[in-house]
Amino acid sequence: MIINTKTAEKTAELLLQINAIKLNPSNPFKWASGWNSPIYCDNRLTLSFPAIRNYIRDEFSKQITEIYGKPDVIAGVATGAIGIGILVAEELGLPFVYVRPEAKKHGRQNQVEGFLQKGQNVVVVEDLISTGNSSLMAVEALKEAGANVKGMIAIFSYGFDVADENFKNANVTLNTLSNYEHLLELAVEKKYITEEEQITLQEWRESPSTWNV
Image 1 (tube, rainbow, N blue to C red):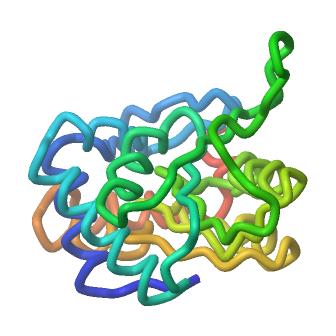
Image 2 (spheres, one colour):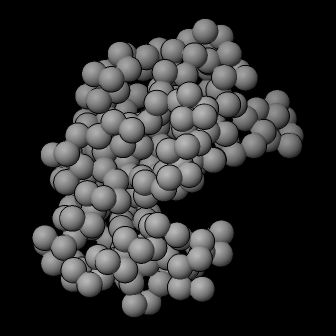
């Protein structure tokens, strides 16, 4: 995984400021997977803050160009990354498509929505990486549609070992603006959490499926 430390710290702070990331070790959240979690991340909130969404747009655009070269198309993963993906495509002057979790059951039964030609170079935009499974399903759908996927860029990653393994096995490069490690360091420094709570949050990341069960 590729990450810029300065960008990672600033992104983490912005996400904490607007409560896009909430840290609550004493009163955990329940994820759809059934996991108990001391952290909840909703990066859709960034779209409601013009200065922050523009910062993410600019960082995405810069890093896409630097790491992958300017692609032919930007693809957003539905639904969380459609908004920011469109902003990035607009900034780079590129076409935009988005990828559904599965093909529609009616009409043209598309999974990839928008105009995409076989052989076009695509960079995929995501809002959040947990295990990476849904993100990589989007990559696979694009490949099946004939795209040459150069890589993926996301706002934030929990940094699970299983995600690293999944991206490695799929041979997909992942770049994120920030991650869990930088988030915790900044959260302690800015007193969003105590050092004791930091330890709890680190324990969760090591075994999220069994934590606080």
